[in-house]
Image (cartoon, rainbow, N blue to C red):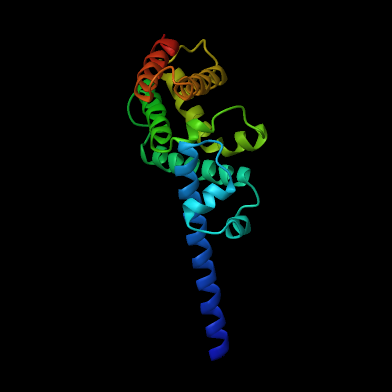
Length: 199
């Protein structure tokens, strides 16, 4: 039978978890804002923006890289959920591919820190694992497009996926370098994909 002490301790643990979750959310939200403005911002600036001490930030994230990884994981989870809801099995595969790319690009537009932090991954294996759900949807989509004639069947699925990802990275780099706007990159990317994989 639970005692008053047990119930009180359980309440304390729930409050601590709730406080920790609020702190993590505040840190990540602040980091997304700050890194969008200044990709070189450090832990102190992130802590100030979150309204927390540096010590509190370090309790949850041992390094700036850990914050960036958590932000990227959160964005990946969000785009994966949106893609799953978009029903990419509906309509011609070519149109579905453009929807997938548009949804992914809208994530970049909504979270500019992703463009600012873009670059070669420091841990390619972790980067690949993080994107497995999206790659899975992309592979299923490309396989269907090749079967149904939306994509050139002479082009291997792996090449179409690699080319799509590479074009997306190139578009992001062009925006990050200030050579084109985000809207221009989206339009160019969509047009390039239409031309590249057509029969």
